Amino acid sequence: MTRPKLFLILDDEESIRQSIAAYMEDDGYIIFQARSGEQALEIVKNNHIDEVVVDIRLPGIDGNTFMLEARKILPDIKFVVHTGSADYIPPDAVKALGVTSDKVLIKPVSDLKVLSEALKEQYDRENS
Image 1 (tube, rainbow, N blue to C red):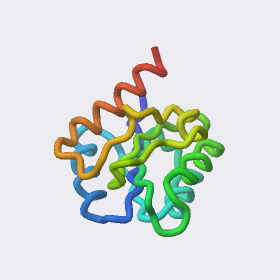
Image 2: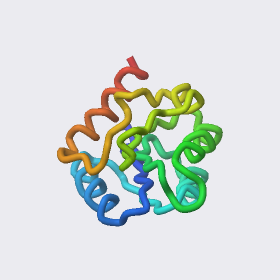
Image 3: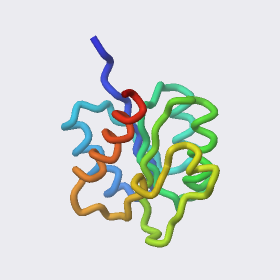
């Protein structure tokens, strides 16, 4: 039996975290939430997180730094960026983690299915 996927939502806005969490729980994920990059790294150190939705502008370390540090802890962790910065372009180091433009969603995403599909697409591509 495969274990349920562990999913982390990193966003400093509680309402955003809650709406994504409610949607992803319906998809069978076990959900963790963090409001800062530092808090998210602690969760990654203590749990085998499979996928993370990452906000970029955060208190403390930003989303880019979080992704680079989290990949050092869990080499196969996957990311989708969910940012309010309409002009966000992943830096080269983040692109090297698999965060391409199709993995960058501008918030708020009006249909959370788009977020779920971005994660599934990445997972399917890397496991085929």
